[in-house]
Image (cartoon, rainbow, N blue to C red; front, side, top):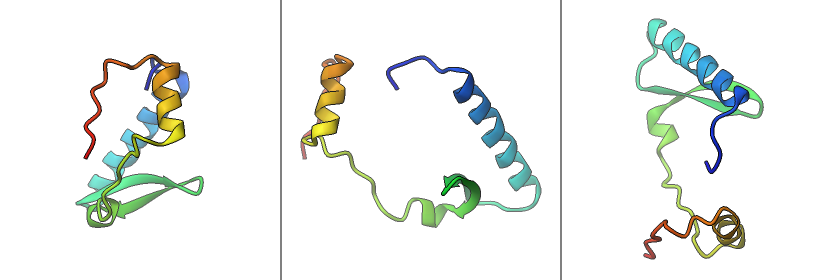
Length: 79
């Protein structure tokens, strides 16, 4: 992110952290907490990382974000 965390970010981290602890104490291991369609759900790690997600560095939205926030110091690795 290009901005410091705000109150919403802190509340989100506290809430998801509590959910992760509750999940672990309930015996669910090798899981992640995800926000899916407005609800928090438990997702197996194998499912969460099943597909490699890539950022298209030639995408219009990515390049405008780089220009807007002047993140020119980021060295982009073109594959």
